[in-house]
Length: 152
Image 1 (cartoon, helix red, strand yellow):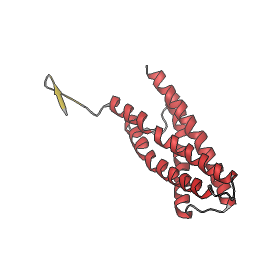
Image 2 (cartoon, one colour):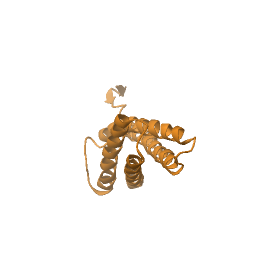
Image 3 (cartoon, helix red, strand yellow):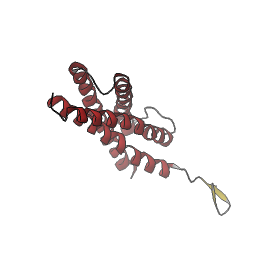
Image 4 (tube, rainbow, N blue to C red):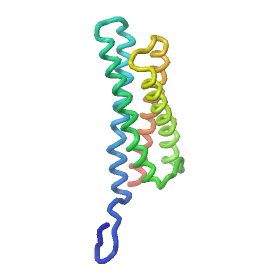
C-alpha cells in the first residue's frame, strides 16, 4: 500500500486489473485460433509429411491457450468483483466468455488425455469444438471491447 497525504491508496485498483485483464486475454484468443488453424491444416493435408508437426503445434497451442486463460479469468473476476453475469454489455461479454472458457478447458483436457494422435473422426469433432470456442472467444472479445467504449 502507498500513502498519499496520510491516506492509504490501493495500488492494485480497478485500473490495474483492467490493464491486466486486457493484456492477458489476447494469449488464449490467439492460441486457440492458432491451434484450430494448425489442426485444420493437418486435417486437410491428410497423410502428408507435415501433418504430424501441424498436430503437435495444434496440441501445444491448445494447452498453452487453456493455461493462459487462467490469468484472464482471474483478472476479470477481480475486475468485476466476482460478478459472473452482470448486466448490459458486461452481461453480453459474460454470455460469450463463460461458455468459451468451459469449452476451452474441456477441449484441452480431452486433448491432453487423448494425446496428439487422434482418429480422423475425433479430430473432426475437436475441430468443430475449436471452431465454436473460437467464435465464442471472438464474441467475448468484441463485447469486452464495447465495455471499454461504454466506460469512457
